[in-house]
Image (tube, rainbow, N blue to C red; front, top):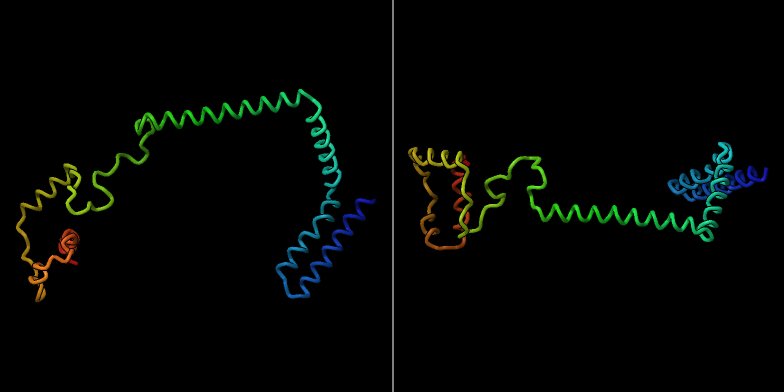
Length: 180
């Protein structure tokens, strides 16, 4: 009977606070207050208050035994040793896999690409091409080159002034091949 009175008193108080928040036009806050206010009545009506009391009593008994019973301390020590062993074996397996190199892990996506993802800087030799690419490059070299498009006036003069745009020659060649 006392539990019911406390539960419904808390629900009523929370509903009053929610009403005051709504009166101040803070509807989001009022909704939160109302949701929390419904919890005590819901817990009482579902019968969960006795369950919570039982859980509280059991936790109190365990805490008292923790302080006074050496058997509980032995169990805690065993749990600590177990956790330490699991963490150590995980650390050693990661360390061993790193020491063995890439062969220890299976390649899920196949071999790495033969070319770098980023174009090499000027003066750095390019990575060797795959045999298929080398054959395609040789075939293209064997074809007759298309006549070059007329360059805009003053382009010859710009080539004489080395203004650092020589690094873009590869990009220009790719764009020219694609007709862009």
